[in-house]
Length: 371
Image 1: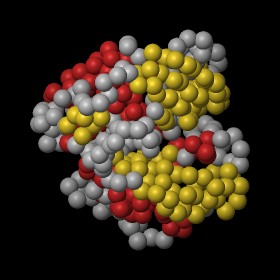
Image 2: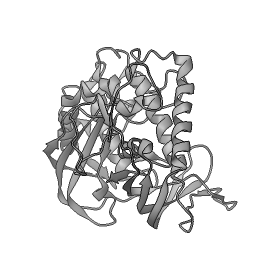
Image 3: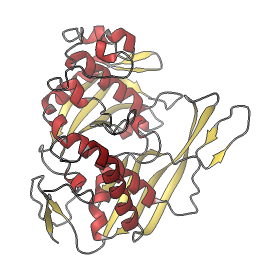
């Protein structure tokens, strides 16, 4: 079971796996039983992410007029970009002090080599229990921070997470406040290609410069904690002009495509995070990301699916932003058991830090990997 060290020269087949991360867990409790519905334009993921980003801009942006405002005053401001009254929020967010402002480091990053392309979030909030179709009072919030630059602001992330409950979630027109207590904070080291919280008998060093690469295939379990939405399979010609997102559970789940997309996104995020230390010119970054995708997709051809237990989820309609009509959100939850070739194991484990399928930024397709 060899350990490999981070290569001195950027290699898209392995370097992205050394992206460092830290995870923080919080115990949360509403003041009453609350059911957070998945409805048009809003999910538990969008509510939490929108609240965090609004609080980030209000508290951390150097241009914000709300840095010292009480939490109560922010309830009407957050969610209304015009109400932020911040020059960085005019149109798409663009930090005016990227060298010193924490908001620029923790907000979603944009590709330097592809205008308009937004990278995966560097701060991810996860609360699977809020997706249950039942009232909840006590629940767990897991906040993951990805990247060298964002991790310099880990204390700010903890402080913002603790303030979330004071501002509260707006659920069906009502503000639901909740208490927030720190449960655990992992060491600020490690790399996304390592296992998370699983005792598999392997002695692991708590450092981000070494990665365990198994020599033999490993048995892994992939659990989809929030609904996985796959690309549209069938277009409807009805009055809504909507699109049904279908998944045929009689066939095998195409993990090679999901893993290939992960490799591309992870490489893009890692290159942006390393700038300029990666030594990769802007014009070369797309090629590096494509090389990572091809490598992982080819390795995934040797992956054996040992078992699939997936259940369909119908989440209703969501209005289309690109034109008239609506999307019918149909996804799956459940788990897949695979026998994974050694070189692919770190990439599969990295899925724990990434959301698969469609609408990942809204909390869909959250994956937990065990084994």
